[in-house]
View 1 (cartoon, rainbow, N blue to C red):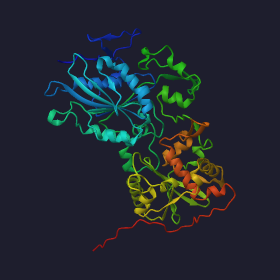
View 2 (view 1 turned 120 degrees about the horizontal axis):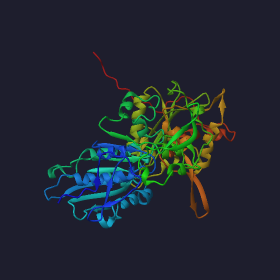
View 3 (view 1 turned 45 degrees about the vertical axis):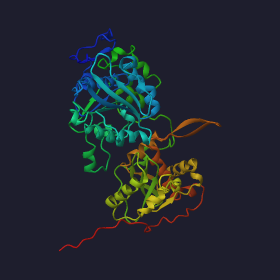
View 4 (view 1 turned 135 degrees about the vertical axis):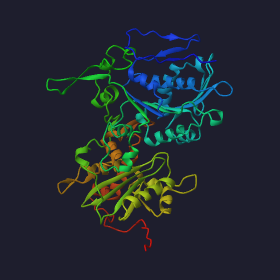
Length: 527
């Protein structure tokens, strides 16, 4: 039996003031789209589709309905059923349950489309009555290692990432590679009619990979041509930008006045309360207004910055910083499943940060050789020293080796940062002391603009959150994608003696050039 369409993709028509829900004979709602960018998104057949728009623009609902459209369009298999399998992804389990799955249930009521079983992962098998659709849907949060492994071991027709602005590129790349293969249904069963990835998002922060790839922000200074090519949006992918919810009111001089008016071209607006966006921005700061309503990139801070004194114009160089020969390059490492490394030098009583490196869902066995390879390829003529998180000396349960042991096994001995019990506050204060210090009329901290994640973290993404405990409330930085490079900076400045300087003592470490490890240079006879 051919399924009755749950989506009516009509030609673009102006929105009406009255919204009347229609249903099919089984009581399932029939949805229509009459906004240009939503229609374009629904009609797109690109292998990767990203729709970016303000809050309330209908993009999440459209993404849900896209799953049904793909399922209903799949060619029938030998048994006459249209088999597809998909995954819905969110960055945290809490958001997946409270937000993403709530919208999904509203779109696909369980009594009409099939129950969601709260297994690991949560799963819904959609076989609605009166159709020949058989669609399995997994709901996955990307906040645990096991969730990433489960994705890697599964075969999907499609994947939908909800709120892409919170997802790092490493996960996006892993997801995209999974659906690129077109492995479900299997080719022996006819293969998928269409397979791919789609995502929705509000405007991201200025350092997010989507902002860079889609040209909403410039390539970082110093980025190689190879990396620029890798970060260019492929022509066969589709990026869809919805109109903003509000428009600036311009003054007589042609400049924005800081006041706004409703945008008559805003999408999905007939489903929102009157003047919804104007009411929404009351009492909100500009970064919130930009990303949630104006559909513009901005740096959004959801907490109190750890280092509120940090200013990009003061501590970030105007162009990429090249290392100075005759001075060691220090590598400060943070371990765990989100490893990170900062590369810096101590020159004329100043800490110079020249490079950064970060990975996700990766252990020391893989990350350490990557760091060593980068040192060999990018800085082949320098001596190196390595410092890091003191907890890296703790042994794991898997092979009884610590992260220090792994790094040492490839010739990179790690010196633990000199901090008792790895206490957080002295680490933070050491960086603060460095930032407040001047030498020869210049800040003692200088960062290359190529260190985008560290810079954004210091601007405010490395921020405090409050957690309740038995003693009341304690405050500590959020664990996010910016935490680990900021931790690296703390270990680096402590190892360079800043902890002793801030209490008036002389650093005990020898910061003069010393041969610790140098990558071997390949030699061969010619002629």
